Image (cartoon, rainbow, N blue to C red; front, side, top):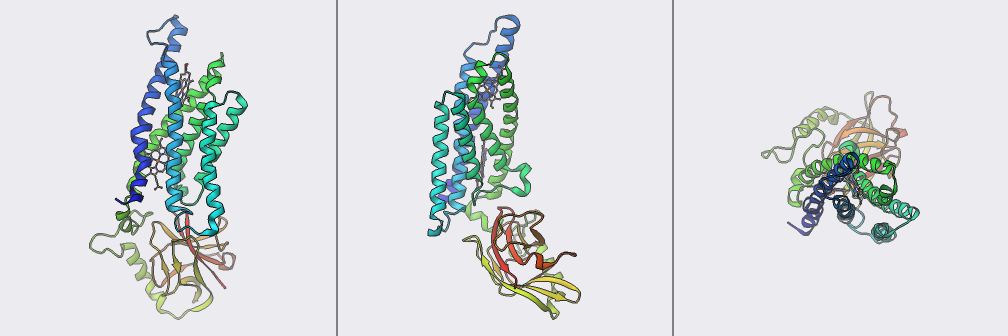
Length: 367
Ligand code: HEM
Ligand code: HEM
């Protein structure tokens, strides 16, 4: 294991060794606190000791700190190893300073939230802590699984952190409120939190297997993530899909094409090198995109080729791009049909996009 692999394991290790045992204690004490309160209200006494409520609160404090803490550790790891700090360029200095400042401000807000007494300050520091996590989570490098958000470890993580921050912020309200309104809100939201934690255990384990250690990644990234197939060990280089794709391309490649427009690929995300020529060609009555023999893109999972309205895509929405399909090969000549009814001039950029990590590798402006 190299230092990056070890750093990547800090977050799951803390989750398993620290956070989940604390969740167990908090839930156990929560159950007892509730039982005690109901029994006392009903019969005037209970065998459950009165200390369970305050103990639940004390360990609850630890839970909020540890959940926010591991979330920040995970995000810091991703931004450092996969975001702007990877292949750092001096032009990114301002953003880098801003990110570090937001990290420090988020931790400071959480500390102040523990200390704040009035409702107003608790509200302010809870909002600042939550906002800090959200802003940091949306930086480059953080794997958000936007294409499968319903099973995204990232979004579950944000929800869990925000619910814990909210629990911490409303502690005085739970105690003050005689109508038990805040108690009920707290109980309902945190039953949801328990489900989210369950989801974190499952999605986190899945991500560990999918992201893997550095020496495994070269092989894993040859897999087709959407169809869930990998090249077998005997034919290491070509998956069946790529073979079929290249055979079905062959007759088209052999024909003489009329070139309507062309452009050179430029790398958009540092480190995700993309180069070569993209062309719009007319073959009989079909308009197609051709990547020339000199095409090269760095290997990655779930890499797609598309036409986009923007040359440096800021987002991927149904309105601003058209899918041409999975990238058939990371090198060399290949052809893609433009879907019927699409005018390429409305989307004048050919873009290589890693959907899995939402990273734009490169784009070619068509002229
Ligand atoms: C998995 C997370 C959690 C669950 C499932 C949970 C659930 C509960 C439940 C069921 C109660 C008893 C409600 C009643 O009396 O009917 C309770 C009370 C309480 N919870 Fe939580 N809670 C969680 C996390 C937290 C956290 C993170 C904090 C604070 C940082 C917190 C602070 C409190 C407080 C102050 C009470 C009142 C205790 C007392 O009566 O002395 N809880 N919680
Ligand atoms: C309370 C529990 C947890 C919370 C709140 C949480 C939160 C997060 C967040 C917000 C991310 C950021 C996504 C990113 O940086 O790519 C993340 C990443 C990750 N988490 Fe968790 N997590 C929890 C538990 C776990 C567990 C139990 C495991 C595995 C056993 C795990 C494994 C991972 C992995 C492998 C990543 C990806 C890191 C990467 O992008 O390379 N997490 N987690």
